[in-house]
Image 1 (cartoon, protein in one colour):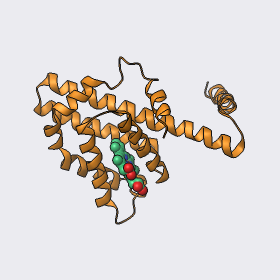
Image 2 (image 1 turned 180 degrees about the vertical axis):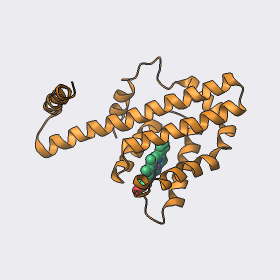
Image 3 (image 1 turned 120 degrees about the vertical axis):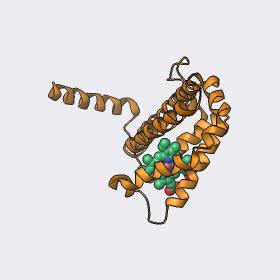
Amino acid sequence: MKAELTENILNQIPDSVRFNQDDAAALVAHQSFLLSLEDELVKGFYDHLYAHETTRKIFTDDEREAREKTLRDWYQRTLSGPFDTHYWEWQTLVGLVHIKRNVNNAMVAGMWGWLQTFLGQHVLEKLPSEEALKVIKAVHALQAVVMALISESYQRNMFTAVDKAAGLNEALLYRLVSIEIDEMLAQAR
Ligand code: HEM
């Protein structure tokens, strides 16, 4: 994915709330404590996905070990930093890899919610509250950026694909979607 697209999506989020150096520092400062949660985090994450029929169907029967490994790698890399363009581009790529496997944004957003609660509970139990709040803020800001990259890049890539296949450019497609939304709103009211 092009660096400009990543930059452009990141720039949609106000600087004042976007994941920043303080957030990166909070994660790296508590790296060893957060890493001590890795086994429980990875197990819990996949227990939930495997226990739910819709998400279970995504996986082949022999896949769990490999999936746990990719989540471990992601967690370790995330807690090491740096949060540079390369990292953000990788997050977008992970989004595309998910799309190819029919993992949709609802599934990913749901698991981010679980991750945030899991980490929040543990840091509040073990760290001084001021430090715990820094980590919680960092995890929330990270989630916001990653979901922004995944969802926006998906939409923009879809616009490009539709334009290529059907000759409908982005502006026209927006217009059609807007008309559709007007109808839906009129029906809903
Ligand atoms: C917080 C949410 C999630 C994170 C951080 C995450 C992270 C990752 C990462 C880092 C990879 C490896 C991508 C690569 O090849 O570079 C991956 C692959 C994969 N993830 Fe996730 N994931 C998340 C949610 C989910 C969910 C909700 C599902 C299923 C319902 C899922 C299913 C998969 C599958 C099937 C692959 C393998 C794709 C392939 O290579 O064929 N993930 N994920």
